[in-house]
Length: 571
Image (cartoon, rainbow, N blue to C red; front, side, top):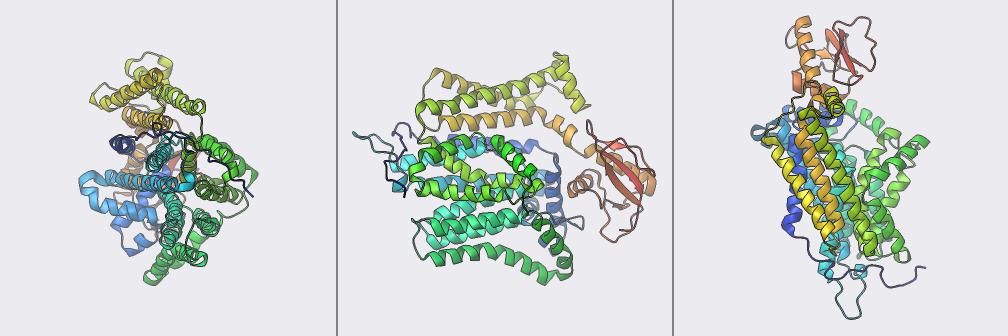
């Protein structure tokens, strides 16, 4: 039995002083809007998401229900992220272009997730059991102030997360998965006030997660939601009825999607769903030692800077782990840790994505139990890491611009040959955020603020400054290095010379992301399954050329990835 002791949360009204709304809103806006510098398809997962959405916008009902890229099934993911991206592309492509409209979807998922994280922490922090210890002569944080500060810290942790920076700019199934996980957690918190509505929302979000990149992650979120309904004593209403609403919410999107597809496009569904079931079943298998090691090692940086404070929350509340604000996110994290022993190596990263929201919420409550000396560690971590990162980005840019530090300049042009670094108005935004960051640094070094949100604020502001500076200064260089634009143009020219304009080629062995990128940049059309194709595009990862290659090697800079056209076959 857990002993009843005074709460470890300790926060004065001054420490809970409000973070201005406009400051938080501006930070969120600057962070996510910097994604519009990414005007190319820089990763295969990004290109695959774009290809699925583009096929939906240009295709019929089959393309909307069963993700595909140019008629070839893309059965590794569900349709949810594609639906959102296709809708934005339908509405805004004329105004922003296809890539711009596609990027706008990432703004939607980011705001959707931020609202869920903020609202979860807000609802949990307003409860009487979560309030900080009352001072003998008053002055402790008021319930509303404590809840508002805790919620703001949770969102700031979300922005500061090292892992989210690698995904949030891409409106892909992974980004939708993060949002669905956040809403599954929020639904469970909402059930404290509206038991049946919250239970249904929690199950519905888990079902939505199953329609993103991994059914397995949706399943684990569903089990987390069920555990919350079964274990949390603070919930009202019938436990059996709450569990029933959770099950109904989880099943609803799956039944709607699968049922609609089987009724409207049965022939295509008969081909597509076995592929999807086979891919998803492979995610639920005993994890290898390599997968567990990779997951443990990657989590250390992926969940920075939240996880040390989340662990501190568990330690400081160890005698009151049954408190709702600690137990609820802990249930979700416990299910995710358990799932780590039943995940395939190449799908392990999905578990890290669904752990972001509960880790942020738990860390926000951990801040309230940190003494000032330990709180300062987060400040110094943010100041040192992000200052060094910003200076590094600027030093490489100056080296490429001026030719000073020739080794640094050489490494830049080796990674992005042909890049033209110039001094123009495009550096205004990176320069502005850098100056603002150093204003924050000077403020922290010359003052001793006691507001609890200072550490999360500095972390989120530092991550935003690095993101804006990196993308603002180097988006052209990243495009040269990561984009398949050069490969697409060279391949299109080779196809035209060998077989004429508009010839479809066989790309059956290529990942969906490559096919989507080559179609977007080069207008290359790929044959559907069963169609004849006079040419086939193959990809090799060595200097070895196929024996019957019809072209010279086509490659991107500084990679071992090489493409060749060979004689085609009937697919």
